[in-house]
Image (cartoon, rainbow, N blue to C red):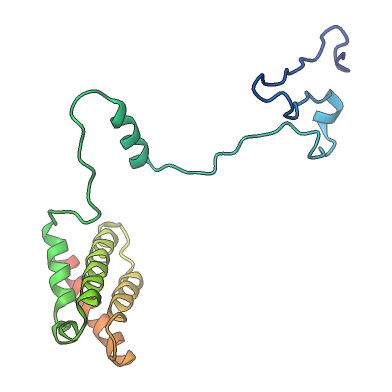
Length: 174
């Protein structure tokens, strides 16, 4: 088949893959099809789209598995060493919730503790930002405190507000 633009140059033809002889072949479209007409799905060349997105950490782990030498252990979800600010944030968060915490079942205690550590890390990240989002800190604390059963909603909001103010004051002091 000859190109409409330049009659001396033939358009390239794609050969079917040897492992998939019955697979539809992508055809090279003529110049007029490329310039403006809408393509029908059967005329368009098949495009492979990758459905999985890999994070930098996953890619680094995959690559490090193939490198010779010592392999690093995988990091845990909870960091073993916490910085001074994170410890202070956790102290502020646990202040005043000991009674409600003691009434929780062992499974609920563990969930509450893990959610609290996650909330403290999130607050720490928010404090490191250039513009501190106080409302986001308040929402994180309120969602964490809502895990406690049988406590008045207004008390939880008041407690979250107090803790937010103390965390902001901590941030301003440093």
